[in-house]
Each structure stands twice: as C-alpha cells, then as structure tokens.
Amino acid sequence: MSSDKKDEEMICGLTADERDLLQQELRELPDAMPPRAVWHRIREQAAAEGLIRQGPLRRPMSWHGGLGLAAAVALAAILVPVMMNAPEPVGITVPPVTNPSNTAQVNALQALMVESRHLESDLRALPDEPRVKQAGTVATISEIEDRIAAIDYQLNDPTIQMTEAEEEIFWRERVRLMKLLVSLRYAQAQRTAF
Amino acid sequence: MSKFADIQIDPAIVKRAARGDARAHEIIYRAFAAPVYSICLRFTRVPAQAEDLVQETFIEIMRSIAKFRGEAALGSWIRRIAVSKALMYLRSAWTARGQSLADDWHEVTPGDVAAHGVSSHPDVALDLDAALANLPSVSRAVVWLHDVEGFTHKEIAALMGRTESFSKSQLSRAYQRLRPMLTVPGEDVSGEGAELRGC
Image 1 (cartoon, helix red, strand yellow):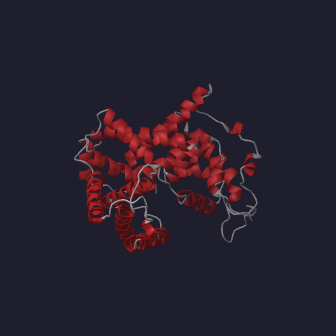
Image 2: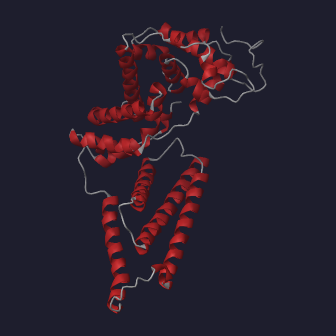
C-alpha cells in the first residue's frame, strides 16, 4: 500500500462502502458530447494556424454534389415531359396535390418520414454508446451522423425551396443512413454485451 | 478507472494525426471529446467556458501530438492536457479576483446545498451531479481528479501547486458535504454505528 493510500484512509471520513459507492456513482455520471459547433471552431483555428492539412474533399461534400445532381436529374425527369405536353397557359393554376402522381409522391414522402421517425426511436432504445470504443467504428458513426445532420440542415433551411421529388430524395437518403447508423450502433451494443 | 483509459486509438491514426491529417484529428476528437468536455464542465460548471476549454485542449493536442512518443497511453496524455487547461482556467478565474488557487470553502454557506435542490434527507433521491456542482470549485476539482480520474494526492498537489495536505483536506471536506446523500444498502445511513475506515 502506498503512503498516499494510507494517508487518504486516515482522512477520508467515509466508511469503505460509502467511499466505494461515491466513487462508483461519480464515475457513472454521464458524459455529454460538446455541441457540434465546437469541432468546427477547432478545425477553423487549426487550419488558420497551419496545424492540419486538409485532405481531399470530405465525402459529405461529394455526396452533396452527387445528391444535387441526382435531384436535378430527378427534377428534369419529372418536369421535362410535363413541360413538353403542357397546353398553352390559360391563366388557371391547377393545385399540384390533385395530380395523382403527386399524391403518390406525398404518400411516399410521408412513409419515409414515418420510417425515419421509427428508426430514430429504435436508435434511442439502444443502450448508450460503450465506454470502450473502436476508433474505426467511431469514425464511421461520426461520418454517418454528419451526413444525417447535413440532410437535416437542407430539409430545415427555410431559404431552400424544394419540390416534393427533391424532398423525397433527401428523406430516402436519410432513412438509408439511419438504417446504417442503427445497425452499427446495434453491433456496437452487441459487442459490449459480450 | 478513468474513462480516458477505456478509449483505444489505432497507433496508425496517431501517426497520421502527427503528420497533420485532419481526418485523423477528427477521429481523435470524436473519441475523446466527451470525457474532455466532462472534465471541463465539472471544473467550470459553465457550458460556454467548458466548450472554450475543449477547443484549447484539442488545439494543444494538435500542436503537440508530433511530440507524443507513446510511452503513456494516448488517453492519459490527452487527459493531462485537459486537466491542465481546466486548472489553468481555475487559476485565471482566481487570479482575476485577486486570490490564489486556495481554499474557497468560505464562499459556500451551509444552506447552499438545500438551495440548489439537493436534500440531505436520506429519503430524497440522490442528485450527486447537483451536489458536486455545489461544492467549491477547487474542492470539486480535487474530488473529480482523485475519485474519477484516479490521480494521487501527490499528483493533484503538483498540478495545483499546493501541498498534499491541501488536497487531502479538500477531499475530506467535500466528502463531509456529500456523505449525507449516500445511501449504502443495508447500512445505517445516519452513519451512527458505521465503522469509519481509519478515522
């Protein structure tokens, strides 16, 4: 026993059980991640000081580009046939929701939103992230969370006007990423259980 | 055991970080941000200040990681930087008020615990987090460093520029404050008849 340990027992003022309980409960106090903006601030400062070198564009960026392209293609696929067959304007605007294909699209969109909510709920039901983490899994999870955050940003930005078709693309991708995230976190929880 | 010790980072990622690879630094950040933030938040109690300390800690890691030789675990190294930044904050806060990093128990009145919603009555659910937050800053830091991060009194004394006795005294006083909240199953919670270890 070190002299430090012996001395500390002389002054502790707690019974052995109380001391153990206190230490255990202190260690079990939950940790929280700092807000996402903190990492952005660190990255900006590090870049300004030349502490990091930026690699190739991060995947969320290229993914955005790809999504933008996909959205444009989808938009074109919907709009071009409509425009080609459109009669001369007569000053009457038909509400888009009356179009059967639009109704189907709204239903698909709603189904994706519901599925996304269910996945969020599944994710919340999983145990907290384990204390022992694998760096590779941490990186993948953080990448997926970033992508989901980027989608949420787009979907919630009031300055971005989206058609339902575009929204559907975003929601479909969100559901796909949520499924990935849930399966990764589930695997992580399984590993911890054993 | 400290939470830092549980986090494993592939040495290849550390090497990449040492070369300034942004992605490797992000992986390290994602892995350690929560325990670093936890220390900073326990020391400062103010989220905005804790976030600033997290930023300072990780910038320091980026500046110094090329010098990290791996003799100690990466987690221990990062923890030491975080603790150092957090203590520096405490010192600066004290310096700004013309005081030394010393005993600040006089700032806490006996009514403070109840005023912050922490009851000393054993029937009331424990709210250790609030009780901890209600301790004087230095004492709270000593409790956290000793009981959660596993520092010895000697190490705490060196970090704080104080004596071991100071560290022990702070811990003892903090325990006295926290003790009424502890309910050990099957034990007399009043402490009467309980066998005190070595006291």
